[in-house]
Length: 316
Ligand code: F3S
Image (cartoon, rainbow, N blue to C red; front, side, top):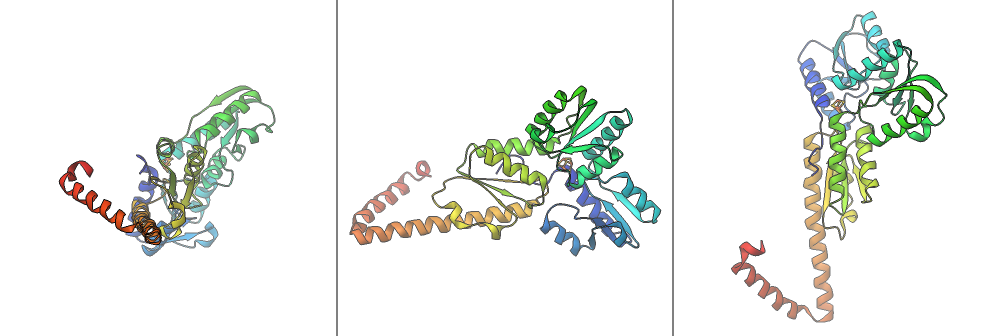
């Protein structure tokens, strides 16, 4: 397991707030899933939290703002309609929103390094009065127009190298550039731990939803390290063939992946590991029988077992 993996502080906080809300008068809704993880979404639904795609679908009750945050227009609409609001915006995302608003008010062109369709980025752009521009890579930033003053902020879960690459390009296209490293520590720690682990194993498995941006960043970071990397959303997606001839597998998980799901995946891998070992052992046995060498090997195995009994501590 990577040293840092799974739920981050902001996601845990949002879940606790949501579960607390479910104990109060409802109904309670989120606009889009609270966490980018299907299994968690199913669990929350079972607790009474419903997912709606737009405020128009909410007639009464309350809305929980997700850890990704939302733009000011969303708060305005909720207030207008007299709906209750629980704001579970992660404090680290709230900081990016404040910076985007402040820099826009001070006359800077705000560049958000991130995926323009991600809810966090949509919210940040909203706080910049809709005037910020989102770019996801240094290459994309090359086509930005010149601006005398630019401010660069970053989607909290973006890869550090994307932030730095964009920053270099924006600096070339502006007289003055202000940079705010708004990458989330929880996210960068997970990436560093994943990269470190990827250097020590033959294969990496990343557990997390395909809609989760930080899980995708982990997959990208591990694959870049040169190790075969597979992403799974649940244990059923593990393919035994991936593990053939593989000695060591590293596991990591996105910040929106719950511990119980990671455990289920690891348990299944252990199960598959012993099946693969058994299959390989059977295949060797069959080969030995067909070549007439099985008795000889049986003697060797017997001697090894005796050794193991006498020198168990050492062999184990
Ligand atoms: Fe917040 Fe960082 Fe998690 S921004 S939601 S603690 S990945």
